[in-house]
Image 1 (tube, rainbow, N blue to C red):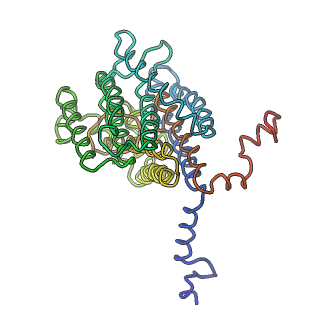
Image 2 (image 1 turned 90 degrees about the vertical axis):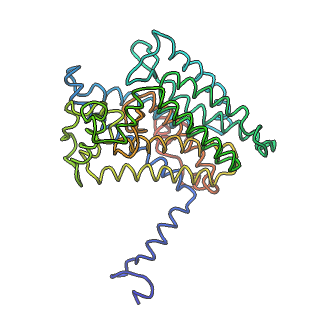
Image 3 (image 1 turned 45 degrees about the vertical axis):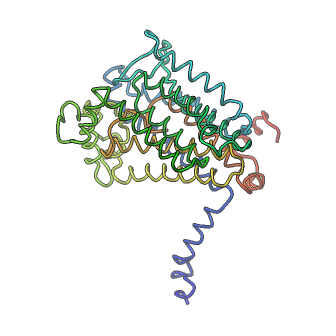
Length: 417
């Protein structure tokens, strides 16, 4: 009987029932909401832990405290989490209203990066605006601005039926995206350029650009990236180092080689939290671009697979939101934000494990840096807001009752019961 019904021993559900139950969970209205929230929280917790582990040795040497970057990251997180919560409660019209102001602000801020004395360079790229005690990276805001502006623009054109020909489809989307890309390119930031181009291509894909047009634009993007690589000697060195990882291990390939050593030395379960050796002045930028290598060293293959799984679930949830919502802007913005975060994670992880050239972009939610963390958290809050617009989601939220934040505010007398 157990074989016929698929039940296990002792009346427990068999494999078939377990699969059916798992599929049933994925079909629930709030699946996307809880996946985005759960993956975000776990990646944030892992990131804060790994920032402390990866930066402790260097900060102890430079500042006398192992907690310097950890405390700064905690402050950025304390700013970003409320921004995420606020974004999760905003209506769609507010995101659309933010599109043009954010685009204008991004263009102005990227222009400030290029002004001598304000812009700060590191690793061959000029990415930061130096504001004294605080340094901001405007290109991170530009990613969010392109997602919102591009989604709003294409949604308006779709409503007016203007997407049947290539000219209305690309104008002014292509010039607007090109302006952001050009400003980032002038700062020699190839990694961010790739992410912006990915968002642009993602929006065209979701809106249903004709195949020939999409292939042509993708070919143009590849040509542009090739030119960017050729004109900068250090990029060519990185590319040749990627193609020949056995050469120049003490110069061009040093960072990549040390990253691979760190990942390989972790084995299956890792050396243990805080027990890694790569952060002892062997691996440059361990707390930012190569934090995934520290994860691999201290948590092993299991830890790296957990990180990959979390980003995979985040990609699934974002695309599920884009597929299930009805509003064109919501669909486009959800797909654009998902492409931004997931492709950036893939490029970062690929560089660490040696399957992609090093581009110098951080691992979302995990690497150190407030300029990247706050826009990413706002984008995730936007995905949470969109997840509430899936069929049946509002009814499920109403049946669930007020969340823990609202209950806490009610208990304090700061919100209505």
